[in-house]
Image 1 (cartoon, rainbow, N blue to C red):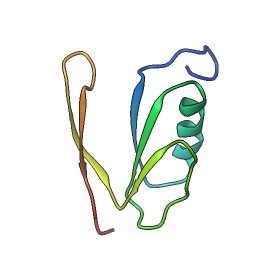
Image 2: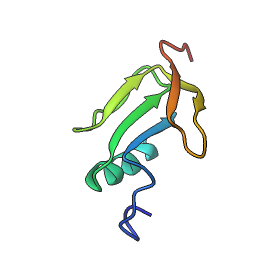
Image 3: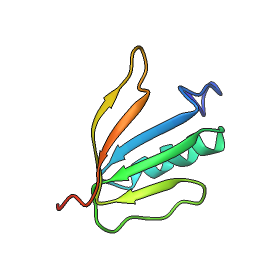
Image 4: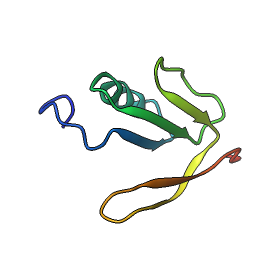
Length: 79
């Protein structure tokens, strides 16, 4: 939606990943004006300017009504 229609799904976006393809999405969302956080399960991850990234982390859950208001992140996950 961000690239094709110019619409953000939210101002703050959390992405969980285990490969590099999520970084293209993170960059597109950042460029559209979102604050982006990436939880990457891998111990060594790429860097991306303007995006907060935590290596060795997974999304354990999300809380909210009608939208995710909070994400629970587990850090230092061993793959």
